[in-house]
Structure formats: C-alpha cells, structure tokens
Length: 252
Image 1 (cartoon, one colour):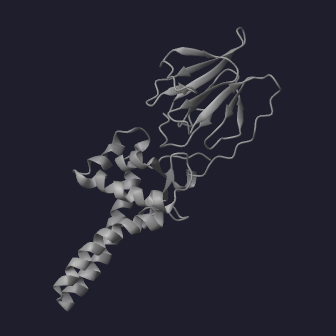
Image 2 (image 1 turned 90 degrees about the vertical axis):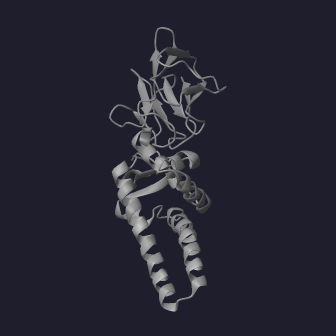
Image 3 (image 1 turned 60 degrees about the vertical axis):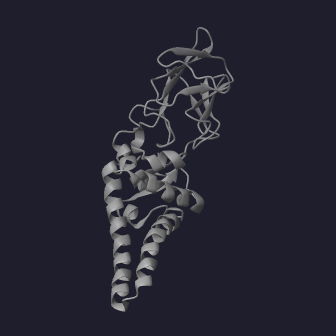
C-alpha cells in the first residue's frame, strides 16, 4: 500500500475541527475566569491557549495515532517524508512551524493548493506530509527473483530498501500509481512522474531519464543529470531522487 497525499479539502476540514476543539476548551476557561472575575486568570488562560495549541498537536500527532482529532475524523494522519511515523520532537517542531504557515494571511497553508503533493510550508520545513490514513503504511514488496544477470533496480534506502525490481522495457519511479511501477511516498520531494530507468540490450547499459522532476535526479556523487535527456549508466551505478532518502542502484 502506498502513501497517498491527503487532499487540501480534507486538511482544511481537519484544521477547522481542531481549531473548534481548542477554542471550545479555551472558551470554557474564559467562562470560568469571567465567573471568578480574577484578572490574572485571564492572562493564564491566554497563555494556556497558546501552549495548549502546541501540546495538542505534539501529543496527538507524535503518538501512535499520528493524528489530531480533526485528522482522525477526516481519516488522515502525519508521516515523515519516507512514510514512517514521526516522534514527539518532530511533531513539536511541526506545530511550531505551523505558526509560520499561518502568520501572514495563511500563505504557508494556502501553498498546499499549488505545491506538488499538497505540501504546506510547515510540511516542507519539517519534511513531513499529511496522508490518507488508509494509504500511509509502507508497501509490502517481494524481492525480485529474476535470473542472475538480468537488469534490476535495487532500492538501497526508503520504503523499498532491500527490494529489487526487474527492468524490462522500462520502469518509472514517482508518486503517481497510475503511471509508476515503483510508487514512492508523497511529501519527500519526489515528483509524480519523476524518472524512468530502462536497459539497452545492444550496449548493455542502463538508461536513466529524468522526466522533468521538480527536485532532480542525482548520481551518487551529487551530480544532477540533465532533464529530458537519456543518461547512460553502467551496472553498479547508484543514483537518488531529490534526496539520499530515496537511493537506488542499477545492477545486472
């Protein structure tokens, strides 16, 4: 099962639910403050509102549930760029960065309408993403059992680490399951239709083709391969997509 980005609509509704929950709790405390008529208590409530906001998202999104109450209602959750669960520290940093996203007219949040894989500013800073809960687990893949000497794509890191895929007429890597044979989690900088690896039987060389990715395809030494042009690879050449979190080897 692949990691699938949650839609901007789902995220908006989840945020509205979370805001309502936090506001209701704060409203109850403000009501108590009004009854007691203690001026200092108003200050404490205001501080509580800000602090509770941070701990609300930290404790819920950093837990095994990986989701605030609003996200649970919408069946979405927060994961790391490679599709794994985040911890409390990552969740706390994400909650802090959420303030940046909302600071100036919610521009950082609105970004999810125009970025690949619906990423907000705080997603990009903390390298996290919000996914559909029923598609956020790492895929289960069997290791390739092709004949020795057959061209294969070996996954060195990421959700497919230790797995190999046969390279026949060509294998596309990206986040779009409708066109890709190796489907990676969204939110890690990998494009929907990132690159294609094929094998030229005549020359015995692999051919890597960056298909106009946003964040690039790189050789192990950090060299970015040209977009839209075939790039020949020898067996044993390693490359990565966007970051070294998604590293592969073309191998015979």
